[in-house]
Amino acid sequence: MREGPLIRTVRDALGWAERQVSQDREPPGRSEMDRTLAGILGIPSHEIYLSPDRKLSSQDVERFQASWHRRLTGVPLQHLLGEVEFFSLAFRVVPGVFIPRPETECLVETVLRQRRGRRETWIDVGTGAGVIAVSLAVSVEDLTVIAADVSTDALDLARENARRHGVEGRVRLVRCDALDAFRRTGWADGIVSNPPYVSLPDMRDLPVEVRDHDPHAALFGGPDGLAFIRRLAAAAPEILRPGGRLAFEMGERQADDVRALLEKSSPWDRIRVREDLAGRPRVALARRSSC
Image 1 (cartoon, rainbow, N blue to C red):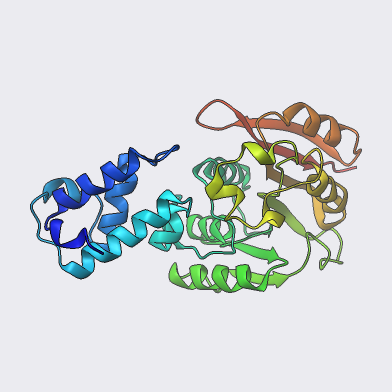
Image 2 (cartoon, one colour):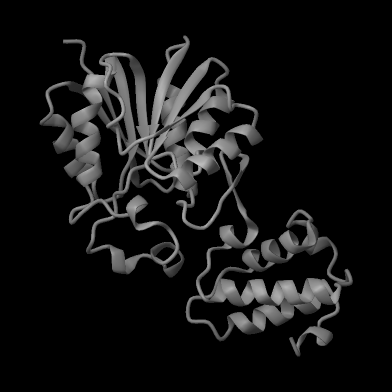
């Protein structure tokens, strides 16, 4: 690239990137510049602030410019870096598999609060990169999680992430659509899911890095966003033990509809809604009644 020779230091590179951002309609934040450059240099992002005069090779400059141009066209930062932090753990991510978001940590925390202090087995439906299953297994040594997904690419990635964090023996992978592979009744202690819940009318409001880069099957839940959630609520009672729990993420405007959906299903009691750190309804929790 012609601009490469003019960029010699970290400061030069960030200045160049900032000038590109000023031409963009929806600019990424400054922290994304730092993280992109740090990823190329193989250093923690906070070190960018500590070494503004660090010399860059021409290869570093070319890689940074190419990556930053891709980011400005909407390529997710997580794809540029190849990983994402979730629940204080680093997970590998790849194009074609849903990128986990920070608000889903609220779902993991909700499940951890539901544990009864004994060995349990949970099912993670639509595991994607495996972040929920792996985070739960890392947090609780006697917890087994069955990670289910219809995508073989997602399951391969979940396997890699489970191995990366040393829990491959307690994260079992199953290829299936929703809960279709689970025929035995009354055995699971819990079911957790970050299901597709975006409604079709809301699709146009999604950021380009989500709408154009996350798999649509992991995003869209039908016209009202609740199609997959209805499947979960209908199938889960047969699989759960009496007293077993169902926990899933939902959109912030879906709380009333989700509560009504669960209340119409007689097997559920103790239906609750948890808010995320921003105070938005984020997680639905229900218990299979003992009757």
